[in-house]
Amino acid sequence: RRPRPAAGGPRAGGGRRPAAGGLGWGPGGEGTDPGGRRRPRGSLRRPLGFTGIGGAGFDADIIEGARDLKPVLGAGAYLVSAMRNLRPTVGILSMDLDGRRIETEGSAVLLVNFSTIQFDLAVTHDSDGTDGLLEVVVIKARHVTALLPAVMAAMLDRIVDFPDRTQVIDTYRARHIEVASVPPLPLQADGETLGASTPFSAKVLPLAATWI
Image (cartoon, rainbow, N blue to C red; front, side, top):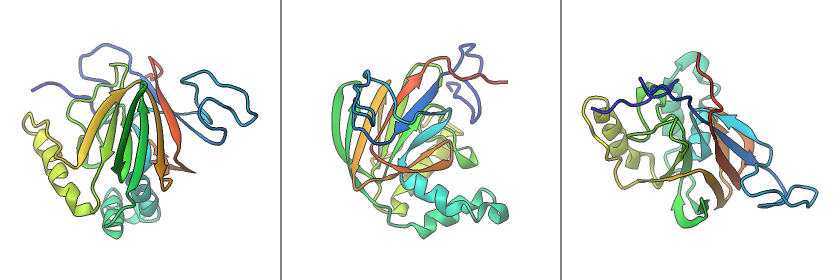
């Protein structure tokens, strides 16, 4: 079985310094700051770094819904929040991934650096925070129950080599990412909601993470 990064650190035995992700949002439009001045390609509005997972959509709704329940329920608060949001908002997504245009629909877009989430489940099979790429994961489920096969696949992947994440998840890889959606979807980074929504831009920040 191939080694995979743990929830808080780089690939076991890799020896390479991990990257972080940078996520930016705010007014001004692509390539332009709020004052109308042109920004270089790949620059970020209101930049914020993340080491694990950032993105927009259903995941941010679950995080927000779990906030008041966590002191009582711990990690179980996320399950309760998900059950309260059985039918997530599905957006029409327009993505630019290293210059490649993708038009699709989804309830969430996750930018994965290290992929392990609550209950030690991996969103993707073979994420590597040292490879200089972010995995762009589009969740296409229109109902929470549609994610159950993907959850089961992640559980199996802890025991055997099981890369499949079912047809409700599409995965891409890129260094520079732009995402817009209709309607706007809320943003989160490393499990914290940002009080903002799409559109957003993101990029890899090479060698930016230090683990102690």
